[in-house]
Length: 133
Image 1 (tube, helix red, strand yellow):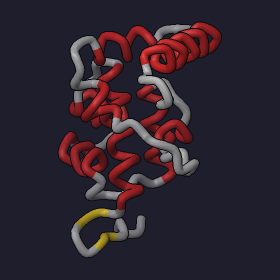
Image 2 (cartoon, rainbow, N blue to C red):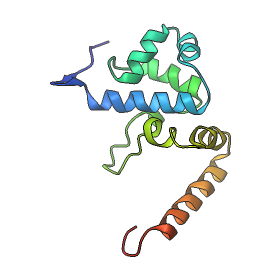
Image 3 (spheres, rainbow, N blue to C red):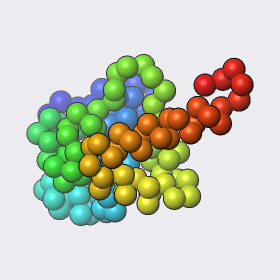
Image 4 (tube, rainbow, N blue to C red):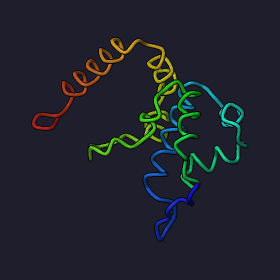
């Protein structure tokens, strides 16, 4: 595995985003770093490095991580659409009710998840100030 490309000030931003997604999904299902480490065959310190973006996650490791987290490997990658990404672990999961909502959301069927997303978007648009959406 090639070392992670580092910027002048630290890890590659993409590696940091992947790590944030891993941490957010791990927290949303109530898994510890130790449990994830055991499931994928590494030390919990290695999981910490993945979550910080200090170490790049290989494709095979991302597949094992995704299997433990109950998602697709692609779900752990940045969208690349240039949209406003919400850093789930720092904003959403730190809000009151965030972890509970995330855990409940993950237990829903895809159809119900879509309904929840549509409802949240509708509610957010309804409360936006006039002229802002």
